[in-house]
Length: 129
Picture 1 (cartoon, rainbow, N blue to C red):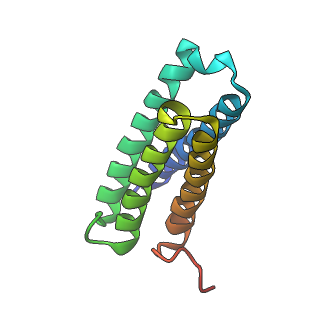
Picture 2 (picture 1 turned 90 degrees about the vertical axis):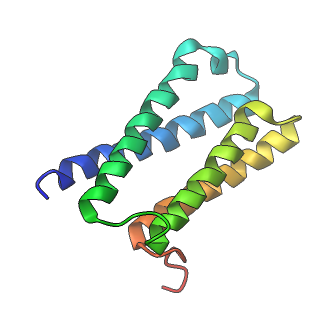
């Protein structure tokens, strides 16, 4: 388990980077900024998300808990799928500004839920406490 702490640090750092970068890109989308088309902005999230995903797999293996076996990890994976879909609508596929704005707000809400589930290790995300 000596690798757990550094890998968790990498994972949590990648989550913070993902959330921050998504928030910035969402604000740029709302303002119609051409910065969204910059090559760095288009590539960097994929690199960070790869680090996030690999560190998640390693952590799950280290703690011996897996999605569709552990309820809280299942909730995180399902939340992740919802976040990806909503983020895609918000930043790329939304038909108009209203649809993109709603998807952006919903994606931020799902991201907050995923973080709450991770902190509580409970699919109800500490709603009762």
